[in-house]
Image (cartoon, rainbow, N blue to C red; front, side):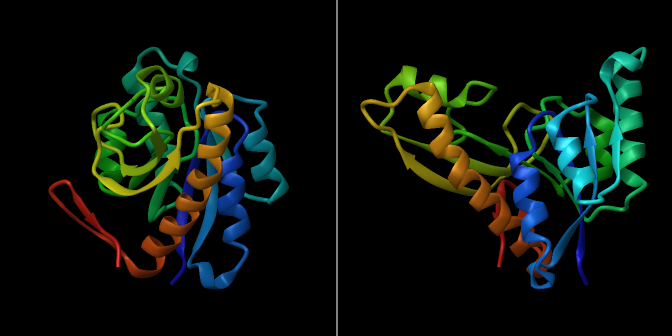
Length: 201
């Protein structure tokens, strides 16, 4: 059976595009059934529309409280009955209702080797610290910021001449590959979560 993916985006949607491309192959085992966003008129939504994938938008500013936004986002995603929800550059922290609905199956990717350098400036912080290796982490989202159980990691060497931009771009390449590989494996073969340990066959 093909796993159903809902992908959340806030910007260009390059990770979304990688998943859309992969899911064109029936053997991949997963298909993007909807794309959600926290703003209108972004490239990620255009990519979804070009692929004829349904979209929905839930803007925080349109709701009186963050909890009401979280409820609306949850309801919009639930309508598409996803097996996995993927944060692909989604720049909003979801709330308790969303995590209750999708706990253990809401995935995010981060451009550093967690638990080092969480937050929105992973490559910049890694360079400032002077580490020799950075990379990308795929994890299951929990209540914290980049604190969930780690599914997979891939290392990227930090070069002496690296800037934030060059390191970010090199991480993005392996980040996309890791995301596509592990979403496919989880869709086809399942996974187990035991405490903080995630096992993907």
